[in-house]
Length: 205
Image 1: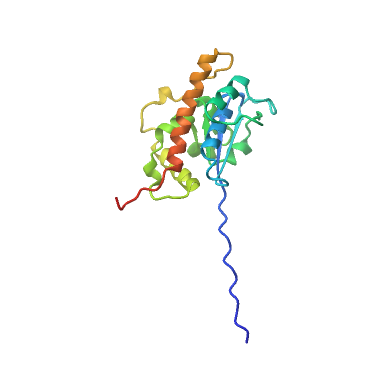
Image 2: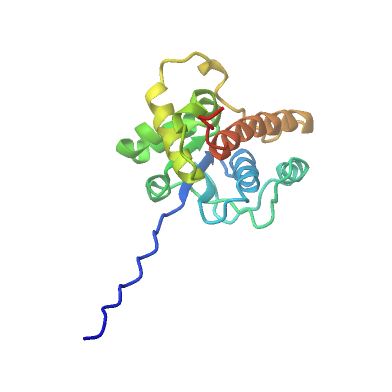
């Protein structure tokens, strides 16, 4: 009798963590945040899908030129950034939704209440609530992101700072005001990226 051949173990299929940024027109704040985070997570191909949309976005409209210029200064790539209108499908197809302001988080909740109540935050709210220790011992960055979302959702309402959670719309504002908005967005994106990509704690130390 011929010896039986063991079938190879199937490869583990793990889908990427999907993160959606939302603002009003999807021309400035949300594409800037999207492209900045994409750049920070480029070392983990296939583990993240980062996109953006606008609550009143006109599909196909190019990114605001000033925002694109600021994005390049901050290390992101604006090429191919085109606006799209937020839908319930976008909301429900993401693991984390980050609005530029409370109105964008609320728009997501209206589109899909059950989904968004635990997964929708403002950008600065999420950065304020996340704690790297929520993902202690988790090595995969996408799994770390999921753990950080669970921790932030459980912590919601228990921390101060909500008055500073909105990022103002820079549409039509002077260049310096737009720069301040970009820096506020970048600050939160850097904080989130650092928590997601942090190496696991070495318990031997």
